[in-house]
View (cartoon, rainbow, N blue to C red):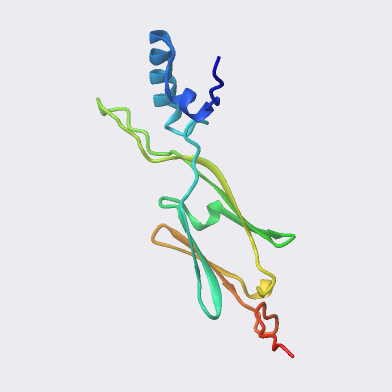
Length: 146
């Protein structure tokens, strides 16, 4: 008898019966419009330069009022909801690949961030959050050996 490691990710994609294939086809195609199978998780770019960290969240089709940005115990949390609003009944065919639904992304903040000067701007589908570094709090130092 040999032991085989259980791979749940693989088993989630490999249907066991023809009935399961049919069920997954209908359930997953419905879930693409905002269900739990394809949860909406926006892509994020993080850039560090000498003066700040920049977090850019790709969330096209939203309004600036749809976002909530909170700081709690050195964690920055960006959350919101992208709603599906433009459903047209007159079309005979419809394929929706864009994700919709609620999202929440959290980021651990370094200790040298000046939380009183954080700025956020939403422009062209990108939410840009600038986290300026506090010049008084340096995380790097050079220690000389005696």
